[in-house]
Image 1 (tube, rainbow, N blue to C red):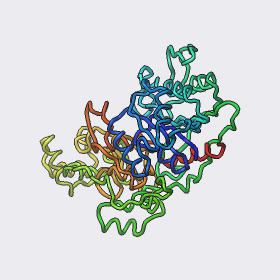
Image 2: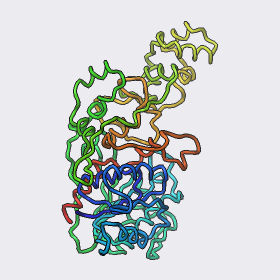
Image 3: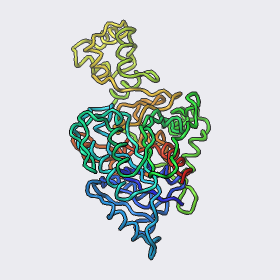
Image 4: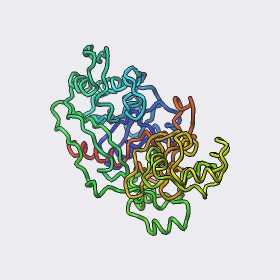
Length: 438
């Protein structure tokens, strides 16, 4: 069985894919205590026991050395009185907040430098193969005054891929040209593009990027993924009368335990839904399938909308403006609503969206407040988000369900654990290509 190390492992999406591909994870690490709870709990489920046949180390990678990793691996019970085996693969996704195009990009964000620490650990362990995963924005982030681990000073404006390839070459690795892979091509019911770097020790057989398993017209849809999780039983039985193969696989489990058998889901976990006021519920009901907040505002202004059966929204608009309720209804119905009145009706948010049931989900992010179910006027549960990422139903996310405000900077609650994860089926596709050349 090939041996792997998973750095920046998060809740364990990448590890799930590696295990599905037949790798044994000897060492993994992440900085978050919330992540640690989820990750180690899952590994115990699978028979990967701390100190016996695997080791998780909660640490800042800047404090993690190759000697630390070797010590923990050689001390495992399975290697008692034996030499540490050669590591076949190191895989990792350094923190991507500074690279992301979805939020504020900051080339001075210290987290951007973590990929350099990743290269340092690779140099100290010398695995046969390496994989780095990150967001698309990783490919064009520029650096000023970057100095590599061997002392090379890169010109201002050097982009991340060039630096990474150069640094790996300096420590004895050839690399493939980075490639953007869409998770939906590999059986994940989600449109999620990720940049993948693959490298190999000089002299070894180069790997290949995985070929798509599905054509665009074959991509799994939101209905395929979570139709059986609709809350209303009548609607669920109408929309999803029988389980899809993807739903069956999620329930039965894809990730094998140490004995070779997947763990089925005996009780559905992480299904709690957010509480909603009447205003929020009625607001969600205004969205058409696949419609964004910006498009809904445009539709209301240009075509009007009937809110006569939305008493909470009518009262809200009336109280905020002093306009009688009956007149509020007529203003919206006749498409005479001002921009200000529409913003009272919907709030100023434009990024909110009601997903389409017949397409893959949008990219799962760490805050699920702005995604609306196509079947019910509500946001999604952690389990529904995890299904869209291709996690097994037996995978339990632990810790706080969500958080807010400044706590987002340091806490990694369940929604964030899901949103930050590498989709297991995408990781599996990449890992299988490494396995082919081992």
